[in-house]
Length: 267
Ligand SMILES: [Ca+2]
Ligand SMILES: [Ca+2]
Ligand SMILES: [Ca+2]
Ligand SMILES: [Ca+2]
Image (tube, rainbow, N blue to C red; front, side, top):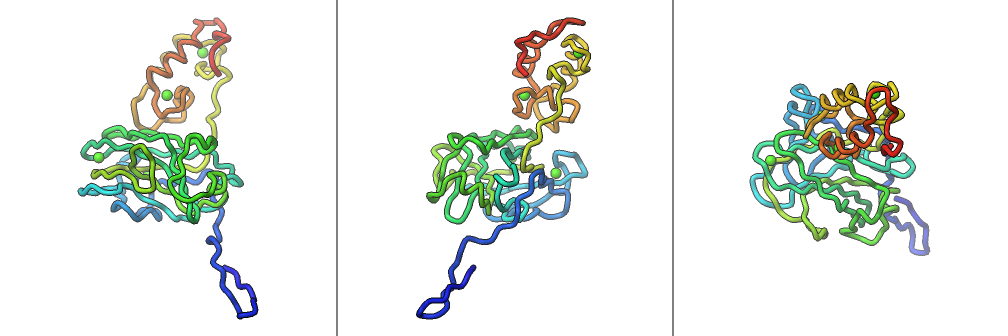
């Protein structure tokens, strides 16, 4: 807020709120009691157990028995500010369709002042287990402005609110209704690519992609759950699963014992 002296005296001008700096690498993990600043919309709580990291880890539970707008928002200062300056080009989080399975389509939104942008790609949480999803902030074609007139670039320069909600296309200001229960956890601002081997499928780093590497790949196969650091490079398409799609990529790399990987093997 600033004051301007005019002929009629002091006029107070309401400018958009002064924002604190968003933090690259900030992880909202709901390890502490409470909902870490998430509120509004669907009733939220933190069960304190059953999060991505297991029995001792909490998560954000959205739970409504009645159909309505389904989602939550945060005004936490760790989310607010200039995401470009902070180097935040991706956001990742885990979802779990806890309790009764619903047909959720979960979207991520950023808001500043009078403008809201919604990520077009809807996430479908698996029933009863956690899966990691990634929001890419770099391609405006992946986004729909649901309110206001500011550009996505401008909103990401001054984020003041983040929303995660259920919605179905077309994406408008008011989302579709649903009832149910949904878990959100480990919301991470910014993305640091894992350090993988020179050839990503060469898990033992011995210069080939053979049965030894495949045995390691098999131990990492997963349809949901936390991807451990030793497995993260096997999620080659970065969709939060290590499955048949990654296996196809793996097979393109395979050359056999002591044989160099296929040169066409995708990096
Ligand atoms: Ca957690
Ligand atoms: Ca549910
Ligand atoms: Ca190898
Ligand atoms: Ca994958």
